[in-house]
Length: 203
Length: 203
Image (cartoon, rainbow over all chains, first blue to last red; front, side, top):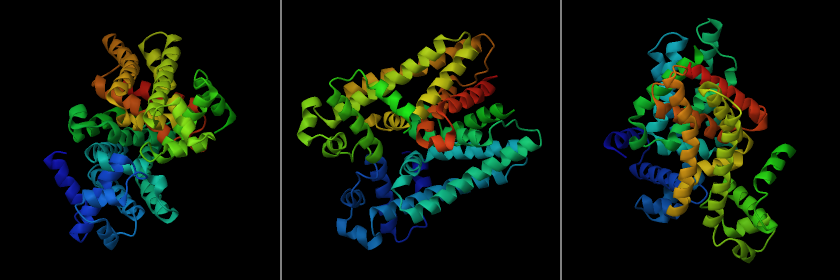
């Protein structure tokens, strides 16, 4: 992880207090990404955080609770990042491009977090699953609304709205799987490439 | 899993002999998809196969060996499926569309296998990793060659060859994550949709 990425991860977690809770969540994220949620143990998480296994339970009831918090932080961050990028632009094409660019570059930048948020959903208990699903749907709606508006105005060509939305999400989500700075350049360039490919696809 | 998918899975594994080895590999695939490679135990795999834990070692030395076999079968299948589809078509555009359609519909059809092949690569020991990486690269080369030929002939517009190849792979690989017959229609329709989106992106 380079300095800039480390700084952005720290920023994402800055509101988690006290500092030991924050340290545990980051250690849990590492453990989940490394071994998968099922295989990661609270012992492993506490070790990565430099704390005793018992200390974990002072802050979180279970590793599922830690997963839920990580999921919420991740999903809120990507939603916020897409919204902010879109707010600066006008018109369906421009706003779709802003979404794609923000969504894909987020998944490249926060690839560890992006892998966990995409692949450990089923480990959540029903009430947390519902909360996270709402955030995912809100994110999808941001781009679906633009595609719908762009198609209605004749500016974008959309044959299959749901299928196109899924394809756009796939480009971003899968970036978290393959991206490394060595392979893909900087996260922003992934975002720009995908925005360009998607606009070509829709015109 | 519907009857047709079950039949295709059986076909994919038909050459694994004896039958108990085949049953173990399918049980291992289920366990890896369900719990992740790290968390799945040989005890869990043998139980799913209806065999004793000791019986596993008659057929495979370790769960890593089972993962290696699953990976090889999966990667050979997707490569073969893309090759066969492309052989029936002429010209870079048609052959690119054939690749995308075969690659994406394979990942929707064999979504359990597709998730394991995409996400458990790092669990392989170096020598098996190399073997699987060659298969992945051969698959990528199939479409990269068409994009290059299409760009050279002026038939396809490709600004960033490697980035475009990755985007095409992402559409397919990520289908294994989100696809269910309830969500996406039949696997062939996912393939057709992606082929259409990619051709629009390249023209």
